[in-house]
Image (spheres, rainbow over the protein chains, first blue to last red):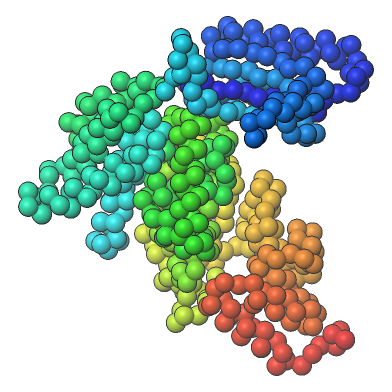
Amino acid sequence: MRYALLMHHFEPGEGELSEEIMLEGQKAFDVYGKALHQAGVLVSADVLAPSLATTTVSRPDGELRVQDGPFAESKEALAGVFLIDVPDLDAALSWAEKCPGAQWGSVEIRPVATSFIDGGWTR
Amino acid sequence: MDPLAGAEVAARDSYGRLLALLCAATSDVAAAEDALADAFERAVRTWPDQGVPANPDAWLLAVARNRLRDWWKSAAFRRTVALDPERDAPAYLDALLDELPDRRLELMLVCAHPAIDRAVHTPLMLNTVLGYTAEQIGRAFSLPAATMATRLVRAKKRIKTAGIPFRIPGREVLPERMAAVLEAVYGAYVIDWPGAERVPSESLHLGEVLAQLAPDDPEVRGLAALVLLSQARAGARIDDGRFVPLADQDPARWDRGLIERAHEHLRAAHAQGRVGRFQLEAAIQATHCAGAADPRTLLGLHRALHTLAPSLGGGVALAAVTAEVEGAAAGLEVLDAALPPTGARFQPAHAVRAHLLSLVGRHAEALSEYDSAIALTHDTAERQYLTDVRRSLTTRSPSADDR
């Protein structure tokens, strides 16, 4: 089963985190990514740019709207997505709890309903 | 146990075992329930004519599995995960149920999984492991049947879509998972069953099932013992519709068979050499059942329990037994430390505080505490008892310190 591990956390202001802390965080993500890869469960891993850089598009009445910022402003922002392929929720839970993002925010475990693989949606 | 009750226990045992086997492979509890319901329906239709099969459970399992397999093959059914050939092989169909694996512990672990809302753990267990209907469970939890049904359906959908596995988890998480299972089983035991004079047999049976599945877990044994010991005294708790407090109960009316079985559990638990909350609670009950309970032994057990697992109920009980050994004033002190006098809606705290206040002669406060205790109880027999005690207090002349 595929699960998306969605990291949510407060976004630090510019210059709020020291170089040291940034390096520490990068190292933690490096270790985590390699562990997922070595276990053969990693589909993809992406850490997102701050929400200040995000743009939201919608066409509610067929008319295109482009919005500056995320579709819902909240204190905690989506900060990264790990896609893993594991047998069940218990396995996903144990990976999620090891995710560095869990230390300074929360990690949402969302099962994947269907994926586009080899030119088609899985059922 | 009378034969009818015995038959019901056997039926509930089969139900849980069959359901656990049917949903273990796919985590699809709802589909397994439907298939099992179909099998029961067919049994009702065909058994009167064709006779009851030699092994009814194996027959039911075979029919239910065929039903599931029809669904799996049907065009409407597609899965992203391949079925496990080990578990889904039709080999089971020919086996006798006794030789079938018992996967009810996995089912109980799923019901009490951290990804499932805590409030649903107990209802889900009563529903899946013992086969109680949403209506029966709703009544126990003072909820409309429709509300309970919605919660159960939602939880089952979550089990399936979130991919909660029917598997005994690894050592690193097993203790906390088992703790949640114990809490859920205990939850069935402490339900405020409306109008029920006795501890419900449902909880008694859940405890026994769990003890059978995990006999080496001392806390599982402790919980089973606790439930049995309370059940053993259930008959003596009510006399002529009136609540009889423990001290006034007639030990001749306690069920010796249940007490003996509880002691077996406690001995097995003790042999593991790992004390825990439920073992201590059971030890306290066992001390009460042993006849003239030594208050000092009880005080020691209550203190150990309150240190290990502080709870509202534990605090109140500790206060009561402290009062017995060290006097009402000392008991009140413990009670005030465990539960601040104001604002608490915990009924036993009011009942005990009322009693202790009357002992130290603070009658006006005692009367008001009795009022709260009477207003908060759901038990008619207990309400009557408390009302009587309160009345006897008002007929006495107010003491000098009561101004």
